[in-house]
Image 1 (cartoon, rainbow, N blue to C red):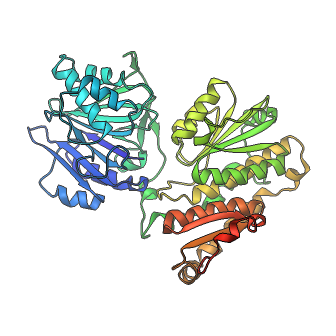
Image 2 (cartoon, rainbow, N blue to C red):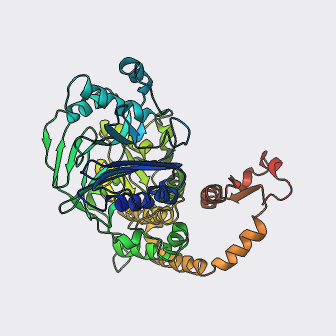
Length: 516
């Protein structure tokens, strides 16, 4: 997912944008860029293929301004290149736009409205900025009216837009649909970001945006309107995270830091969700809704899906409730035959997983109860589900999830225990989840303290292997899928997880010299 940042009303706009983009590097990207305006007739557009460090060097000392936008791009339409990097610019150089999402009908819009325009990029984003320019220059619309008209042409496309008009240099125009964007509220300045982590060193107070809303942001003013153009009043929420928590500190990589944080995450979950006697502290309304369900449906993607596989075993063994686990991106294409009284559980570290949100919207349309288990308060899925439980794991910056995965499993264990006790299941009564979490935390700490040993094992066993197979039964099979994913994500070694009983059914043919 691309990263978006913006600021207005700060003389240090350049450093704010670059620092914000660095905090969004974890999302992955292939190019980056910024546009800044200094209010005195000078403006600067700098784009670079490669790292933020490369962009910072290209920016140098001369580039300055008090209002600007920035972007990290992960290529979808068009190859990674400077031309395709954002911000994208209108033909006359007046409008600048950064975008996260996919414009599904951009080719049709291009042919219908912009057949006479020479495009400089292969992106769907350039179509949008050219449309805004067309409606302003050819139809005489204001920038806001042109922006609104353009948005009305996009159908079901997903987008997070941040637009600047050179002729109104202290103003940011913001819109979203199925893509996260927040407005950060400052004193004499305001910021925009796709993730609050990017701007925690500037403000802790943020306004959430809903799909279809348009926001005009100035240094001392924020105006939100809905799709009908009516004003929307909304109070900011406070993000209670120290900016230092989102920093690597002395660690070379975020992932190593987050691995080391896992023991404390287990202890934190125990403190938040268990009383002194070890009994779960779960909302009564949530427990009542779970008790009324005849089947649970866990919906998730990637690592969260693997956590859901473990969770399903816990719900079935402790609460005796049938539980299915579904990949969110497949749900719409292979929707299961639902039971009479389903309950949906959405696992998502960020709370913004687009495919999971599509399923949740469908669930809400059918008025089924739902729970989001997420690490990010005030995220989209946390707002739109019936209930929310937070992981309290602290910011997870690394692309490869670690502490959120183990936290998801731990919180599902607590919830399964609570449900099992509520429905008088003996297995839940004897399951001492508080003791188990303490054992897990201590075991994690022992492993963390032995990193040097694991480094030796990795070098001796995996350094030159072309393939790695993880094998397990029961819960261990579910865990083997996640460990294989981690090895693929981090080392680019081909790795797969297999049920050990299936090894002889074809899989054994893949084993060759140096396979681990």
